[in-house]
Length: 97
Image (tube, rainbow, N blue to C red):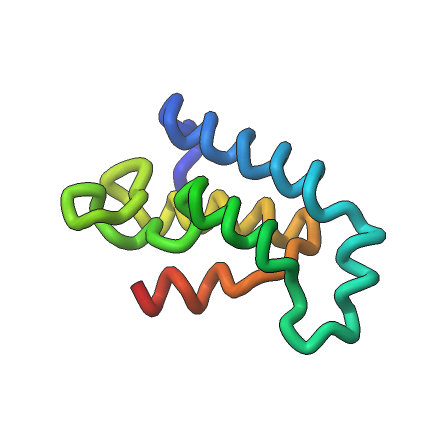
């Protein structure tokens, strides 16, 4: 179990937590409950720019891995998604990449 984050991992996790807190408050999540897509495209596009969708791909290959342990990086972000009940295809996009 990773007990100490690198400075890059810590920054990425804190940035994601703040982004999700600002962009997908509970009211937004509830309003999307019956939406067939389930998330707003603009919000997701901004998350893609943050690097959410290629955490399992090494940076040398065009990915956004924060460390040499992409799966750990992904779990840090997945934790924030769960904590904020954030919508979006986080798992599917990373596995597909």
